[in-house]
Image 1 (cartoon, rainbow, N blue to C red):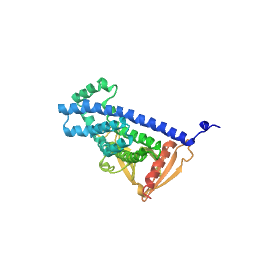
Image 2: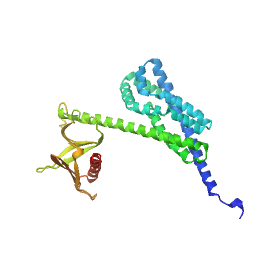
Image 3: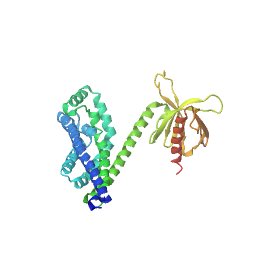
Image 4: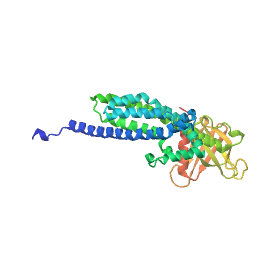
Length: 332
């Protein structure tokens, strides 16, 4: 048999790597061009004009947009490297600026709050709508553009991991790609943690607004919110009573609904009890089979026992899972 017809698995594998690497490199280049262009739209038509007009004070401008102009400059620098096919060097240089994305994530909640406040002002809202109507924006709005940096961070990680995985270990770029992928992973994890903290704060503020009465003050501060919903409390005697429960990382809060006709607190809840999860013994009495009929949970505390029932077995299973996590976090 001729040597021309002999297959070489090593060469075939390297050819597959090269094709995948080429696709990842092309996607990184093309998406970076689009990303840099979109960052530039905000710089040109919002940041610079608002600064020139003095519509927002410098501190407010910084609060709304964070390090946006710095992110734009970094993207421009990275794009120059990518267009020159300096993949490894460009990405390694880019890693020196990843802290900008952490800062941007930390500022996101404040940015949203201040922007919403300004959008309630007619003159500012009209300015935003006028800019969004420019042909350069297509159908994009400012609200679509502001989350872009954090979305792009995840894209960076995915694309650089694809580059590293499809670069031969003997290639001079391999160590650079692997190093950049690791740094991107670390920053992405920090940004995700910041996002979870912001969402938890938002949920805690929402719950605090639902609770009224003296006992409710300060009950949710410093806690992690896990779940809320209606459950039936089964008393030793009498009929079950429907109560709203809020589960936190360290406590279960039971609340009674106020009348919607209440003059001051209609639609809110009165806190009735707060149970420490560190002292809870949890047991599923029935409702294991997944069939109809609901289920019953037993929660034992040093001075009280709660029997909680639901006619929705799936919902009760979710409660059991969340309660188990809360209890187990205090027994490690």
